[in-house]
Length: 228
Ligand code: FPP
Image (cartoon, rainbow, N blue to C red; front, side, top):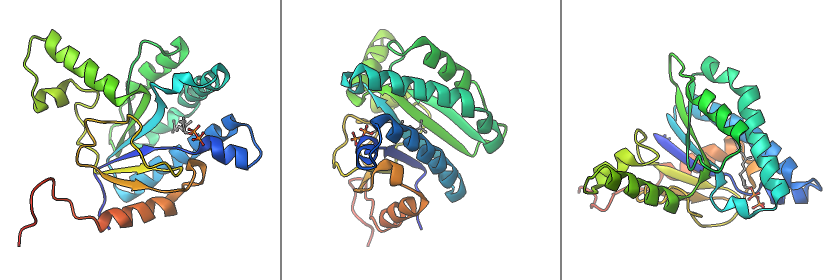
């Protein structure tokens, strides 16, 4: 099986999973966080070195206040309560997206967690919070222009939210929709896309393996032709 260096995931379907289980939407997000943690473990086992997860988009602010606040509290509580495992398991965490609209408590947790560097890094997990692909592109070009530089692809990568990560090899979206929804627009240029109807709270290791098997059968040419 081919293993992507960098896997990106749009974890969709928490709300529908909860509704269909007769639970409030937020229960789906709680379950979703558990699957997120299990996914990180599975990626470490499989040798995936970079994992980017879409946790909250620049458009998610349009949801009812109750849900937005619950999601913010969930993320903050998760970082506070589970970060002790990061160093133990060799997980480095960073965040991408805007930082100017997040609740102070969450921001403080993010800044604390970002400083934790495992001695032997097994995986670098990037959590996208208040992230939008178009917003990243605009912010990045602004930074380049403020530095008085002419934009190039190389400079864009350097000034972007993901200066160190290779472009994702594979994007998985759960929950049945077949779109990118403003995730990592620049970085997904040549990424293989995999869509599944499975709701995120039902996405377990076997589903990941299925996605990787599908990915292994893809032929990636990056615009070139295959050598005879
Ligand atoms: C989509 O479900 C999910 C989100 C809006 C992101 C929330 C994701 C989590 C809480 C998991 C985070 C994981 C970690 C490890 C931090 P939806 O509400 O859009 O579902 P729906 O489309 O069925 O309504």
